[in-house]
Amino acid sequence: MRTMRFQVLIVLASTSIAGGFIGACSKGGDNPSAPQPPPPPPVGASFDSGNPGQLDQFSYTFAGADTVGYHCKHHGMPATVRVHAGAPGLSASVGIQSSPRRFSPQIVEVQPGGTVTWTNGTSDAHTVTSN
Image 1 (cartoon, rainbow, N blue to C red):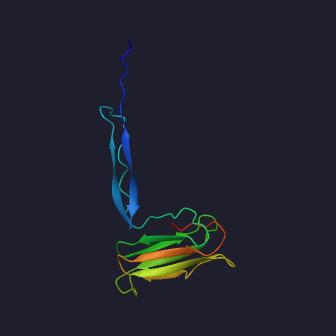
Image 2 (spheres, rainbow, N blue to C red; image 1 turned 180 degrees about the vertical axis):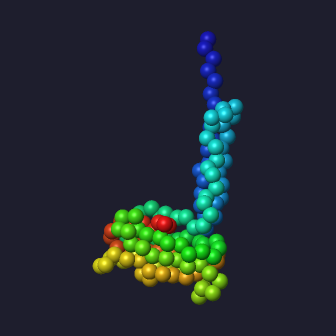
């Protein structure tokens, strides 16, 4: 009779919601080489939308005052989000446009805790990626 030992590994993926780090958990039993939780995210805004399809939206909430540059990984289109207490409100919208390819408006402002929502108005693949 052969005895077999199984080890169960449970890993919960880390998730970013509203610009904040939620966390991760792993349990590897007695295995010291089991995966460890990921390190905390870097200070400042860090985001990547993936490739939203036509009319898809991507939103990101900015926790504190910051000036964040971002771009499209496919086309290099640059733009900026300015987060400060004197901004006009807690939300802003940005269109992803073609002819010429650009984010419109190119600079948006929100208050700390504010959310920017990008909408891909083209049939092209675009990303919204922090610099």
